[in-house]
Length: 131
Length: 117
Image (cartoon, rainbow over all chains, first blue to last red; front, side, top):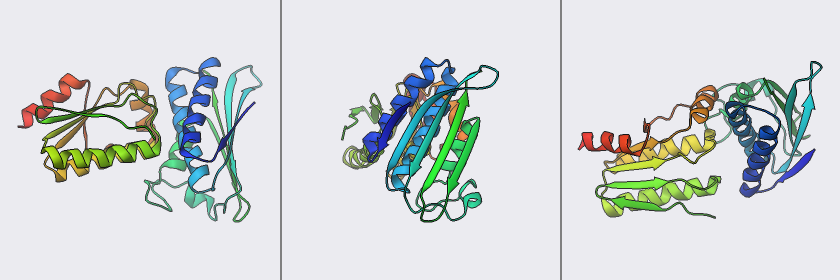
């Protein structure tokens, strides 16, 4: 498992590069690599901007039927998300963005789990399986 | 922070993005392009993203904004060379690049700009 700290814009780029390498090594197609790296970029930026920094964990996982996938976890100890359903709505934003970061990245991956409590930080786990 | 060079050829500004895009780099490019449009009076901007591996919502929004800013300087922006995987991902992300046109490559982008003038 790789751990990449997210404390700056440089780190967001490093997360993208590391996710790209692991996804390519584990047989994800070019389109799936691009989707996963794009989702990673959105989530890493959220960790930095909304979570005040945190960490990305990149892990290779196997499903029961032997499929290989790449699992990413982004965690921060920031203010958390008061209303998760609202945060996952297209177009909802706290800042000047488009509000597509969370909702859009959920569409780009196969599994998506968001845990957050106000004051207790946020964790997002996503998985993209090879086909 | 790295800087993306802007070339002026005739009435067109050319930008070819060859580096991994950090948020600050894209914002810098936006400012540099506005300055360059004001200084040169160019009527078109071509942004080549052949080497760009991902366009996320932030980068996409910045590209749209470059298009809107260019328009205020009476210039049109054409994004060229988008990779197929990037196009598929952008669509699934739900992002439409408002304010800019797209073309297959720089040559076709130039045709669009020249057809306008």
